[in-house]
Length: 463
Ligand code: MLT
Ligand code: ZN
Image (cartoon, rainbow, N blue to C red; front, side, top):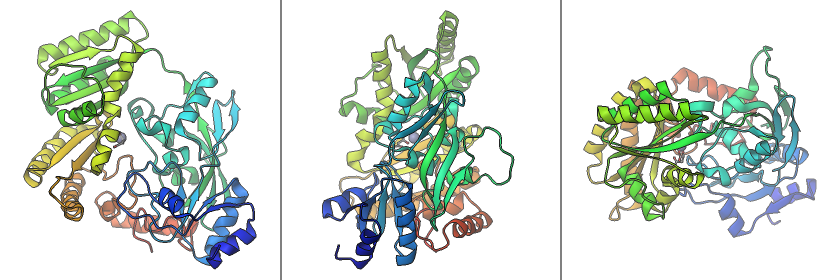
């Protein structure tokens, strides 16, 4: 190790796996945003809690910033290391540690991939219900750090609802054991909840105890084609009133074009501006009849133009692919992503304003809408025209994000619904959080991380 700081780290932790090869620095220094050039000092892959604590103590002494790192599937730059930081990858800490049948909890290390959490829960006949398309690559630590949402929030809520306990190493190397799996605990501040969604700025998660639930009843998946946004909201209200929804996701014709080009199968003939993939409980004939009746009512009202119901698991997966394949199909175009939320009651008004704004500001630019409309969470992806240079494109998008942030502020919404603030949205934090709140957030950060070594520059500018 030619860098004396790294030589000191290796001296203290001779067994620590440390990577410094350019390929590794590049691989671990970026996330799915691809906007920043990775430039970490090194990558550490601790094998356990003691090593994490020792790394944090070393970082304080050497004044080296740490970027906690999981699957790096984040979309807000929260896991980017572009300024000589040490990437602390938790990928070797990826085991299931315990299952408790009485408590119905699963205790895991943070580097575990979400899909492996799903499988471990299912192997005990239970469900860990947080789910989204990146399940095969994202890690649970990252899910907790961003309070990840996804496609089942309408039924099960965000990651926050499912964390019964957390072990965290703070910015000065202390190990905290938070809530210890308790269901009821009225003993003061809940630091576990504070850690969830803190984007690696308050502590490094080293263990999580997850709450599990019953496996869902049999369900059906339906694809609907709709004429306009107002109809979409009517259908949502109708379906939510009559069915037990597990998911209610929307996308536009443009999004559909991209997934079809990437190999998905068209399920409805004809061109329609909006589509919904919905999944609902269908345990018996009565539930299936209710779904059919709701669909027919929507058809009569002109809220739905066409629809298809999956007849097999393979068809259900094919319908889901139309929605879940969108991110991957857009990725080669490196879209500028907006991930916003408003209260469901504010969705129609917000959408109308946004559509007018985008038509005015981006008349020639391709804008792809999709997302978790049943949660009031919309993904607005802007694609760079071929003849516009990357920098000019980003500048244009940032201008529009400012307008978007102002619109959101008027509607009491959030600039980040589920992706996090990271580097991408930190300039817009004040559209969602007041000055007083941001001052308190900074104060909280100083308590947990007095020297500001944990993920500085993410969430807000480094202090
Ligand atoms: C999704 O809903 O598919 C994810 O949030 C990813 C994305 O927004 O691209
Ligand atoms: Zn999403």
